[in-house]
Length: 211
Ligand code: PRP
Ligand code: MG
Image (cartoon, rainbow, N blue to C red; front, top):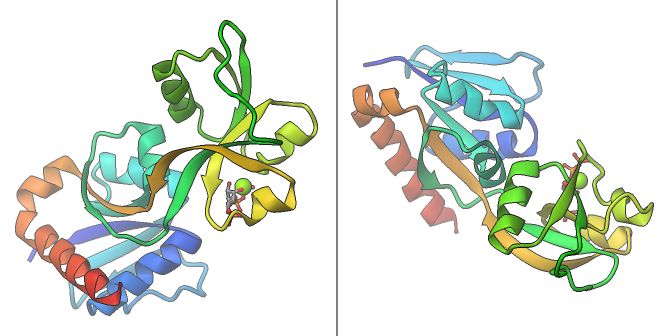
């Protein structure tokens, strides 16, 4: 049996990913309360590594990890050269444009100021709609930007809508449905196909049951 390395995100998505693996009898070597970043499961020949959500793609693309679980938002933004083989159905939210009121965002010849953590996805989206924009790249608390006049609107993830509501913002347009995806390194998928497919099928079956 080949050795597999699986990259998981630290935080909320990581915890759901651990649960998904535990449901199929894997991931029992992981202690989510520990500060350790690597857990080996010698019995099943698997190592789990815990990285920043946006770095999961980097580890998988470079082949340091064979598999990873990452949000579709990060895949869209990174344009990564990996296979996305399964929609895991958890970590569901929406990529949305939001603002102070449900204002018109498509303005002929006028530049719309957009604050976001996701400049590439945002640029592409508005380019396809021929709307000129200026991107204001932030690293978090994006909802603040329209409130203090830094931007006209924001592009961000909306899950419960609580953050928007608490800051008096509204969704203007939904862009994409987001959820957790199982990604695979291209070379690993060829050389460790049976093992990877076996895990993917078990995850798919167990997630279907829990829906
Ligand atoms: C995320 C996202 C939204 C919020 C959406 O922020 O950027 O702000 O969660 O969730 P909700 O609709 O359930 O309120 P996060 O908490 O990760 O913080 P950050 O943006 O400051 O990084
Ligand atoms: Mg936020």
